[in-house]
Amino acid sequence: MQQSCVPMAGQSSAVTWECDCLAHRFGNAADNGMRQPRYPTDMTDAEWAVVRPLLPVPGWMRGRGGRPEAYCHRAMLDAIRYLVDNGIKWRAMPADFPPWDRIYAFFRRWRDHGLAREFHDRLRGQARETLGRDAAPTAGVIDSQSVKADAVVGVDSRGFDGGKLINGRKRHVVVDTLGLLLGVMVTAADTGDRIAAQVLLGQVADVHHRLELVWADGGYTGSLVEHCLAAFALVLAIVKRSEAMRGFVVLPKRWIVERFFAHLMRTRRLVRDFERRTASAEAMIYWSMTLLMTRRLARPGPGRG
Image (cartoon, rainbow, N blue to C red):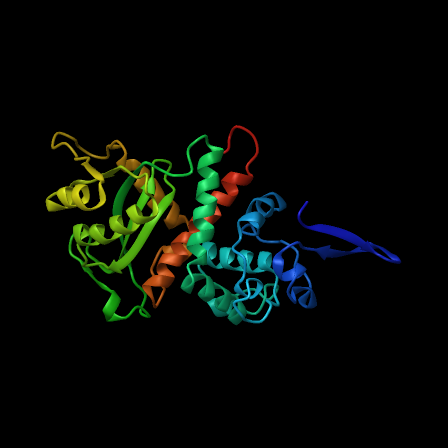
């Protein structure tokens, strides 16, 4: 196993915990000891075995300067997972985790250097391959979700969505056909879907070169269809709701992104937007998806996925 316990000399019942994270092997994390998993969001040994090879290498190990990290990477990841899933404040972090300001500094560093997205994308590629798909997707679904914003969200990044009657922010996302995130952009709630889609689809197309087809709802009609084909070589297929339909009806392809939004609502930090910066709000969405994917990858047998 990646984490093991070794009996101490003269004390058969006591154990010391060993970790193979880079902070323990090459940094100063051994000075702060190890914590034992106790919360539902803590990674199991099977999850850590999946996560450990996919973690980005810290800058201080690549000759980019900085002090060697003093806290276990596994404990840091567990702390962020706990915060995202339970929706707590940073200062309310349980005492058995590292100090909250060190956890926030870890979160901020991963956010600002794109490491959270890099880690998420590696997990997504492995999750797709485990299910027999190619790591690079060829089709996706785009949609948006408006959520209320907390009082800490400034007027420069919040607005009023007249259609949903929500004062807050809007999450624009592109997911693959498995419901895994390909790209996200958080804007004020009064930003139009077509305006945001031009920017988001451009970002997604630059990263996912094999993407050819994207399904969308009726809010993305108009000149956006021609723009996507000419600028990004993407076919934007509109899945419309028939006027004859009454009540709830599962629409082809569009249910995939609705299931994605349902997953976000299960992580309490994302029920409302509590982040001062839109970059933090986007990072929280990536961390929420890492929770889902690590659990799927560690699930044994044919029930995986």
